[in-house]
Length: 330
Image (cartoon, rainbow, N blue to C red; front, side):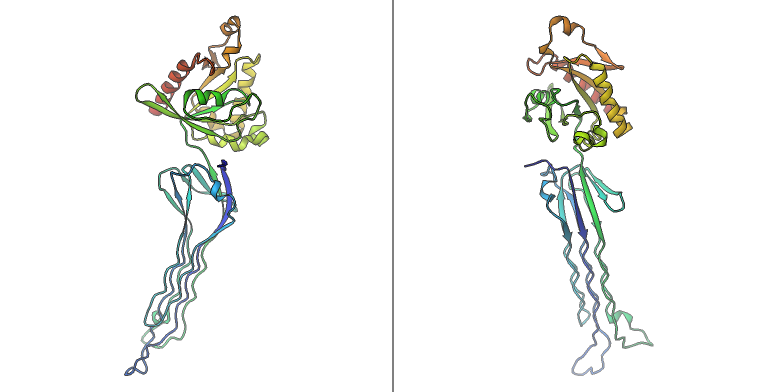
């Protein structure tokens, strides 16, 4: 199944049923009073979190969802049936926007959480409702109201404890496959990862966390270059960021600075998240080059690692778990 993290479609609430104009007619009551019933309520459209979903893939081709109309009222004060609602299952972590007003309607992050995105129209009142001592035989009723209509945009933001980010081919996917059971696509060319991957990482006896491998970022990512703006949204919910930078780069600091700049331009709040730098592909360095690797960058801890040999992995995991615990207490 393809990973789809953004879709748009229109939702339409059902129309309320019309009220009924009717008069009581029985054998011994030739001139009975009004007995027209009310129309039923139009159905609503509801979004509901389904923990079995991890993508918006199933909604990619839908253009509209329309709830059922309310039934018309009937004689003998019979109320019309309410319209059938439409319940749309969505994955946890979905942000719901009113696309035309550019306003957030809800952020669904809890299991089975629901959001009514449009309401159905109210049913019209039957003529029995309009009877008064001075108007005993009203010959009119209300029409049902139209339901609400909205153009929605759904954005999925992954829920993960740790976000692995860096330039293309920096070794993020290899690292995720080393520390978890996730098996992302890995190759020795840039942009192998086209969608975020999640993996559960176990550390020690009782500690575990969820890590997300974010597709590679390049300069200009905040403005959409290389689809970077679509990928950056997935680290907005993470508690800790791990910057994966190739240790073989001669300009480690400049790459780190570029990544920080892209975060700042996309969302300055991301710079407030705790972060660790993982200098990857250590196995490709000579002993002399390994000894020259920095232990910190801009005041943040550096861990030099090799996802192939496993060197430095335990040190990195220990630092991540410690930083997560500190972030939780903070």
